[in-house]
Image 1 (cartoon, rainbow, N blue to C red):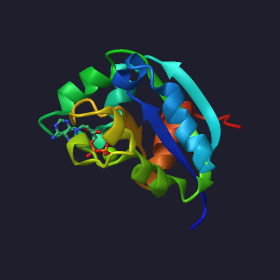
Image 2: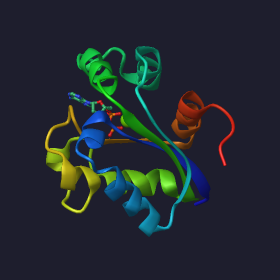
Image 3: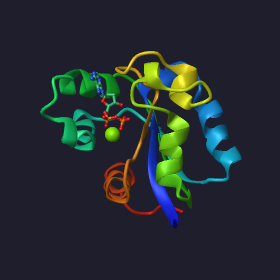
Image 4: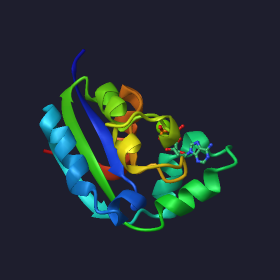
Length: 138
Ligand code: DAT
Ligand code: MG
């Protein structure tokens, strides 16, 4: 285990549902530190780069449409083992499989609108932080 940084993003459904505060609060209470955050509408270019690993999937077009459909709340969090612990706190990709008490288990019911993104490895965290924030984090 190590001190890590991860990229988390509240998707347009989460921003519309007004659960930014609740979600930020969960990570603060767990003991993680917020290192950067911004509300922004993602360009198609950044959305396609972010989800490049899914470019061949049948849902890719809808995924990019959805992520660019309204503001997202992009964040960088730091802490011990934060990459994997944040994924546990988020719940499964499909909210139907997510336990109550997880973010997706509490706020979502369909995979297409599952409230939050979180990096899945050290490599993807580094790539995503640099894609969304560039340099200059606290
Ligand atoms: P995760 O977001 O848990 O890392 P992923 O990387 O497999 O999951 O997929 C990225 C996003 O794509 C996911 O959050 C929601 C969407 N998605 C995944 N599988 C899907 C499917 N079968 N139908 C529609 N959207 C899907
Ligand atoms: Mg993923």
